Image 1 (cartoon, rainbow, N blue to C red):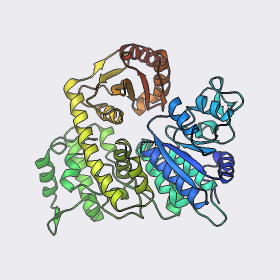
Image 2 (image 1 turned 180 degrees about the vertical axis):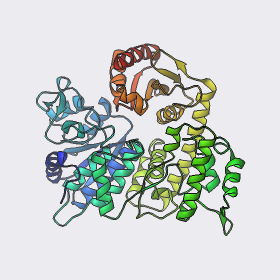
Image 3 (image 1 turned 45 degrees about the horizontal axis):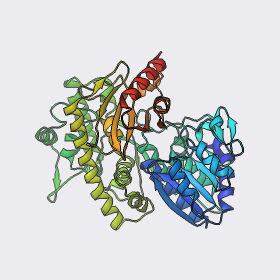
Amino acid sequence: MTDPVPALADRATAAADRLRAADRVLLAAHIDADGLTSAAVAASALARAGIPVETVFKKQLDADEIASLAARPEETVLFTDFGSGQLDVISEHVAAGDFEAVVADHHQPAAPADCHPDAVYDTDGYADFEYHCNPLLVGINGASELSGAGAAYVLARALESDGGDNRDLAALAVVGAVGDMQAVGGELVGANSGIVEDGIAADVLREGTDLTLYGKQTRPLPKLLEYATEVPIPGISNDQSGATRFLEDLGLDLKRQGEWRTWADLADDERQTVASALVQRAVKRGVPAGKIESLVGTTYTLTAEPSGTELRDASEFSTLLNATARYERADVGLAVCLGDRAAPLEQARKLLANHRRNLSQGLDLVKDRGVTQADHVQYFDAGGAIRETIVGIVAGMALGTAGVDADKPIIAFADADGETKVSARATGPLVGRGVDLSVVMGEAARSVGGDGGGHDIAAGATVPAGEEAAFIEAADDIVADQLG
């Protein structure tokens, strides 16, 4: 067996040995695409190793949720795509003998001083313990080089029995990484690239260069271009007749046997024709060069999945999963990840249609209400008009659109069970200049009696209702310091 991420091999082996010693495992995971795929990867590996497992999903892992896990009969709890940042609370339960913890995560670990000294030790300023598989502990960037699903995949490889091969799970790990916005310049890099290589070797993944537009597998060609707002092209984007006319002028057959063709249906020469014409149109209409370059990039195809379905493309698959978990149906997403292609897939598609509708309405709401500009951040308060589980996605979609400054992080508020959910998004260039939203969310939230964390480019928090203005003031000051 070759290790996909050699730096984490020893940690993964220790965690795998602990899991093998368990009578049964309670698997707790987060509710986004990365969380769902990390759960599916870990659950599959445990099942193949003959270890009984039950999976539960948590919207957030706070003290009450951790206490609910401690109250269960399982003696071993595996946390995937969260757990590191909550080691302050988890360590108290471990020290009390409530359960043994194993963590496969990529978020910033808690500070050692905040944890129970009998359960953790200090590794480069991070809370650490014996069964802790986190890239940050070995100098790997958890925001851009390894996702939660990636950490779970490293653990899955360590769980292989003699003659076993879990490399087919690399496809799900790639879906998780893409869903967690880890594609740097459109491509998975660092430790993620080792997982991609595993997937290619296992014949479940293909890496290629193609249009980066969303919906290449499933959207009719005119809709693919009409909805391609990632790189707005005048006369095509948001213009149904313009998109159709553009394609017809290229001499393409848009239908076959009365059915609209998709990008996946086109021959290679037809794709080349469309891609070249799109670039030429973008240049003529003055689209910035950097935007034009992003029209074409690295794509990840799940070769074991049927062509023309959402599951064939890593980006579409991850969006489908987000549409299940963020609407309290993580069980549906997990079933799809585990290979159920009957009722769960149909249910996921219905949830996806609803998800797209809600995102579109959410973006319209932001456009109508506008965002408020502070000195170094900008923000909007959706109240109860946008679900707190998707307000961060809406914020990310809004960043850089008309009236929203791409040179400032965007912060969004939404009502959440008597509290306020805060979501923040930045851009790659902002992170390059020193912005770290994980620090911003954590410090600003704690200054008003809440808590938060995440990644440098995307993070979240929960704060008491009524503290929004104080939170913005604190966040603005922290970003000012980061930008120097």
